[in-house]
Image (cartoon, rainbow, N blue to C red; front, side, top):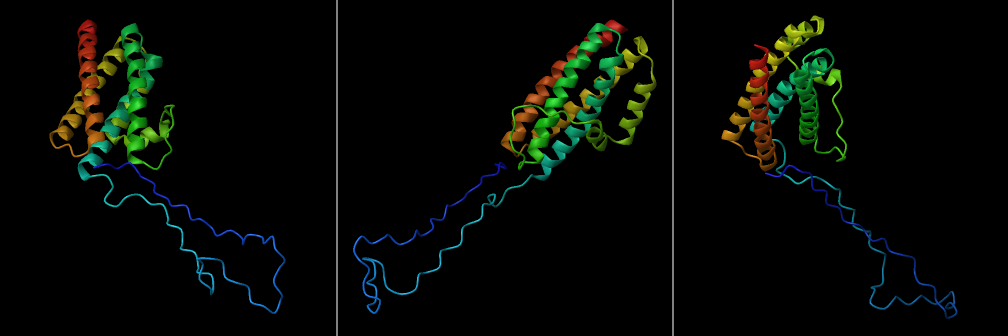
Length: 215
């Protein structure tokens, strides 16, 4: 199923004015001769222009819609937490992971937004979601977690709490991708889910190593 909008338009050619005659105009009391090949009589009204519209049968399937919403919710929490960790994490490796996760989830959020809003004009730059947009996708449990992270002091305890939250969140994200891929019904969404699954597994390996080093 291809949900990309195909815009189809037909240009209507307007009839131009009659060609100027190089010979003198006929007497006013003589009727003008019709143009060759053109029947005499009143000018027919032009056909109305066709309106551009998306193809019928499009839309987002229930499976794709559920997958996108769940992925955006879990990704929004990971992105919001990583934005906090970028400024508060003390261990260099944890701070680096927070930087990577922030960049990755920003791109994922931008891609999913374009999938859910296909009328948006494609642009080459990535537009990061603001805090208000993230908050709309995060449930109360996630908001409580973020509030705890905001009031924590930077240090080993914060780093461990962030890494644990990321491990839990990545397992949730992995499950969302795998659940969708079992019954995938859209080529574009399937490819996105496959790419996301691979990146999530890589991040889980990095997080396991961080968790082991911190003890």
